[in-house]
Image: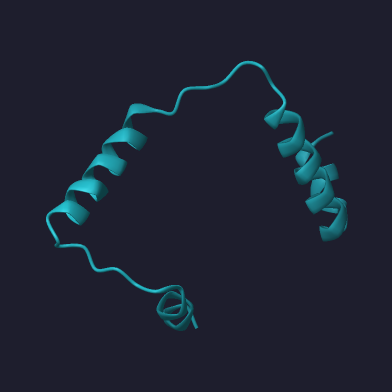
Length: 67
């Protein structure tokens, strides 16, 4: 299936296709390692939290900022 064919599908069918792909990936035996830059970002964020310099938002505050 080409990207053009995928784009021609209705959104609901593309979502279903995406869910099927994700489901198939979840059952793969081979696991991919996260790239090192993911670890670096997570460590930076943990350092920020531990230093008390992070600004934390409640879920409601976050929802209000994205309007």
